[in-house]
Image (cartoon, rainbow, N blue to C red; front, side):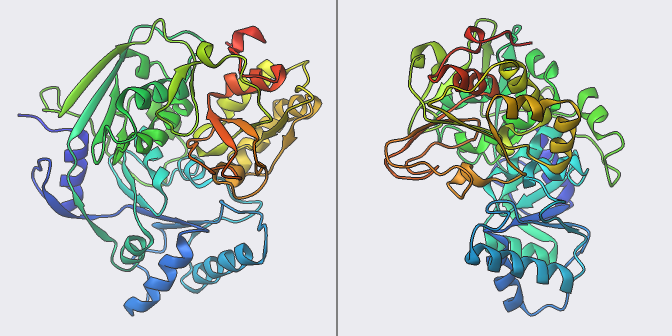
Length: 423
């Protein structure tokens, strides 16, 4: 009987011949990540352990991205703790303002997370790296502290739920729509502590940016990890990026899974998650006409170059509705530079959008776009719980960059086809 990707990766990392769901293992960690919210707590706990050095200065990444550039004294102090720790232990991968990016876009861009590896991060959206075929998952700050000291962490091997996307998707349907549809079908806890494995012809035709979006939101369905088997698209993305040798892993055809879903997405239209849950998903046509005050295009979910290209194509030659504020946030400095070279930033500014340096910012209600009481935002981010983007009496809808850009022009939620052609 065969084994799944999750089982194979954890078996290799723990020195076991084979594993089954429910097994407990102690696994070697290939990369550990902390940000400006979680790393300072991890550093405090690390100092209590009493070790003289970190397990590997090249396999720890510290990236202040949630409140940067620092929005106040408290956040400046948080980043100072990270900076001093990185200098003291000569941590190679410390990236701050001007060199940084949103962590889950930056690490793949730099080739620091690779197929077949075990990656942990003190941030729930660490599952993003599953798009590369890595067992990547979020942990608590104390777990990060233990990994920085020992290079190991224990796991319970998760069962696998396989999602097969069949058919041929419409041009306006993106990776964001596929994952929103999935979460709408499963619910926020339908894949609790499971490995969500995404496959099928639609996935194989999807570019890496779309795959990162899907893996990023596996946690929104309760998933431990979101996995996509590496293929030629993956290898081409990694060419010239990867910092270490790697061995791609895929599930055996006869590997038993807890459940399998097969969805033909040929007739699927763009999806929107309404307040106050990522699982409250509806076709865009059912929410068309909903007035909005703000649109945010960015985040670790949808701030990559293909996202910006899609938004710019719909905004070119148009103006944002006078009732709407549009904020565009490229996910990394490299993406910002690429968008500038392609003229995308000019399109955004001429459309009267505000373009920000890379930051998580408004996604978590941090800064750069906080909502007031009663305001409504449409965002390409990943969560829309009560108060997520500001006032507890504000509301957030989640969508793809295409829906977001089109709606920014219309002043209400609309199908992108009503504003322009999506290619």
